[in-house]
Length: 200
Image (tube, rainbow, N blue to C red; front, side):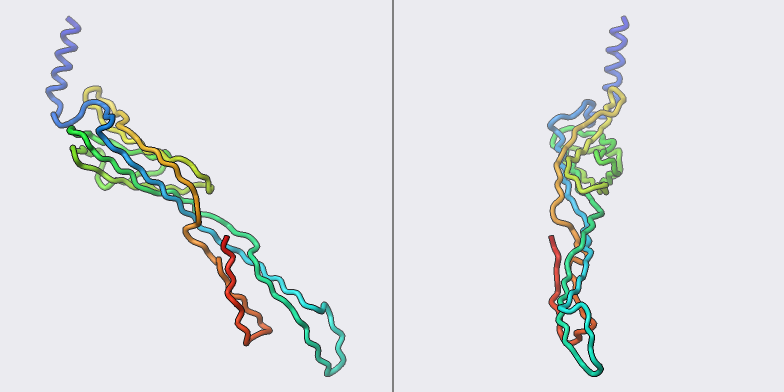
């Protein structure tokens, strides 16, 4: 008797569900893709040393002496900062039923912004796009994962619809600050020193 009641209740729940909503977790019907692009800043700090061919001179009144000297500008150190990972998360419904997307979670723990409000019913043949941006404490390569959740109306719970992972690596900086400098000498006004760059 209890079994018949459970079956009847189950059929009643099914009859109340919208026919276009998939009540179970999707597998290959939803295509989830993800990108991860890195960026950071590098600032150069310079040092100038100046040496001459005479440390000291003892000149008689009216006497002149030429001192030859050399000025060398070099990078003392660099500071790298503002380590960022950003990208897009695409969710495409390639099946023939709709899914009630409830939320999209990024493993870096940052908010994910989609081009539609969530929850959202993703119909067959349609896709939604989301973006994320994270600031990292250091320039460390890693793997980033996005997880998409949907509503299971039969069990009345949120389930994992699918996910996507992508590796990211830091290459050249997105911006370089003071990577090139102009050197001027207060004793030499007519000579134009060449521009010096210290790119790594």
